[in-house]
Amino acid sequence: MTRFDNLFQQGLAGFATQGRMRSCRQWRVAGPGLLQQPDTGAVLVDFSSNDYLGLRTHPLLLERASAWARAQGSGSGASRLVTGTPPQTVALEQRLAALKGMAAARIFSSGWQANASVVPALARLSVQVTGAPAVIVADRFMHASLYHGCAAAGVRPKRFRHNDMGHLDAVLEQCGGDGLKIVLTESVFSMDGDRADMAQLRAITRRHEAFLCVDEAHATGILGEHGTGLVHGQADLVVGTFSKALGGMGAFVAASDAVCRWLDNTASGFIYSTAPSPMVLGAVDAALDLLPGMAAQRAHVAALASGFRQRMAQAGLDVGLSATQIVPVVVGAEQTAQALARVVEQAGFLAVAIRPPTVPPGGCRLRVVFHAHHTYEQMEGLAAAIIVGAAEHVGEKAG
Ligand SMILES: Cc1ncc(COP(=O)(O)O)c(C=O)c1O
Image 1 (cartoon, rainbow, N blue to C red):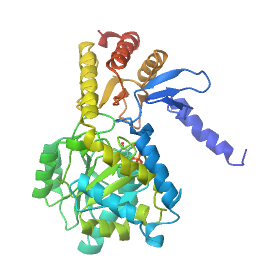
Image 2: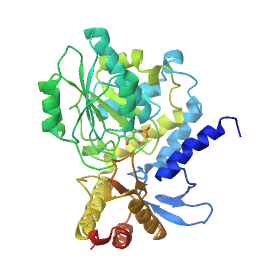
Image 3: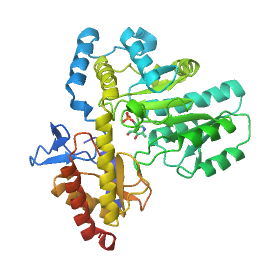
C-alpha cells in the first residue's frame, strides 16, 4: 500500500461503475490452438488470438529462435544506432521489404511502437521541409497506436468515415496549406475483419499528392499470394507485424530507402529503444521460409471464416462486413456481449467480448478469429454455442 493507492482505487472504481474494468486472466498453452485455465483445468479452443497460421508453436520457429540466440545472444544489447546491425538482421529486413514489394524495411519491437513512432516522424518531415504542419487524414476505425502517433505528433487527425473512399476524397479536397498530407488506414480492420479498397486508396492519395501509410497487421502472412498481404507496393509506407500470423512479436516498416533512412533519424521507437531480441528475429526468419508453402492453410482459414459467416447469417446475427479470418458477431450492449462470451466459454470456446473504447458504444461484439489448426467441427461447435447464447441473451435476433 503506497500513499497514492487511494487515488488509484478511486480511479479504478470509475471503471467498475461503468462496467468497463479490464483485467488479465491466467491461461497456459495446452497445445496448438488450445488454452487451459490453471485454476479450473478447463481447456478452451482459442478463437481469440491472432495466431492465424498457428506458427507460434511451430518447431521450425522454435528451432530458429534458439539457433539465433545461440549465435547472437538472448538480447541485442542496445539500439542499433549504438551497436550497429547484425548481418542477419540486414538480410531479414531485405526479405521483409521484398515481401511488401518495397525497397527497404526497418524492424521495430512491436506494432504499437512502430505506429506510435512512425506518425510523428512523418509529421516532423512536413515541418522541417515544408515549414508547415502535416495534415493527417485517417480512417476513424484505425488502430489506437496510430491515434497515439497523431497525439505524439501534436496533430489532430481529420477523420473520414470508415472505409468510405468518397468521404476520404472529400476530406482531402478540403485540405489546404503546404503541409505534407498523410493518409492513415489499415488494409484489414482488426475489430471488423473488413478490407480497405487498396486500388481506390492508391488512386485517391495519388490524385491529392498524399502520403499513404497502411497498417497490414492483420493481412501480413494470412492474406494475399504467398501471404504478402493486400498492399504489395501500392502504398508509400506499410507497417507489418510479426505478432499475428507470423507467430512472434515485433513489427516492421517497409518503404523506400529514403523513408527508412528518415526513420533511422527521427523515429523515436527506433532510435531510443533496444533492438528486438535475436530469438524473436530468428523466429520471424523461419516464418518467412514457411509462408510461401502455406497456401492450403490460408485457404482453410478463409473457408472456416466463410462457413461461420453463413451460420451467423442463417441465425440472423450481424457479422458486419467481415471478409477475412476475423469475424465479429455484433450484439450491441456490453452486458449482452459479456453474457454471450460466458455461454461460449462454458461450451469450451474462447471468443472474448470486445467493448468500448476498443469499439464504439453500442457496437459490442464477440471477435471470432479463425486459425489454421481449427477444424470444421470446432467451427460448427462455436457457431452452435453462439446461436444458443444469442437466443438467450440477444432475444429476437437469433433464429
Ligand atoms: C491494426 C493493428 N496495428 C497494430 C497493432 C499493434 O501490434 P503489436 O501487437 O505488435 O504491438 C495491432 C495489434 O494489436 C493491430 O491490431
